[in-house]
Length: 63
Image (cartoon, rainbow, N blue to C red; front, side, top):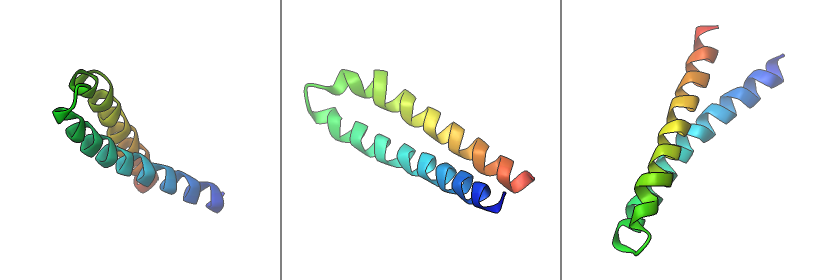
C-alpha cells in the first residue's frame, strides 16, 4: 500500500505542475494566431489539472 501512496503523491504533484506548464504555454499563445485555443482548451484543462491535483493531494494528507 505504501508504493501506491507514492504513486498517488507523484500523480498529484504532476497534475499541479501540469497546471503551471499549461498556463505558461497558454500565455505564450497569446501573441500567435492560436490565441482562441488558449481560452477554450489550455486554460480550462489547466484548471481541471489543478483541481484534480489539489483534491488528490488533500485526500492523501487527510487520510
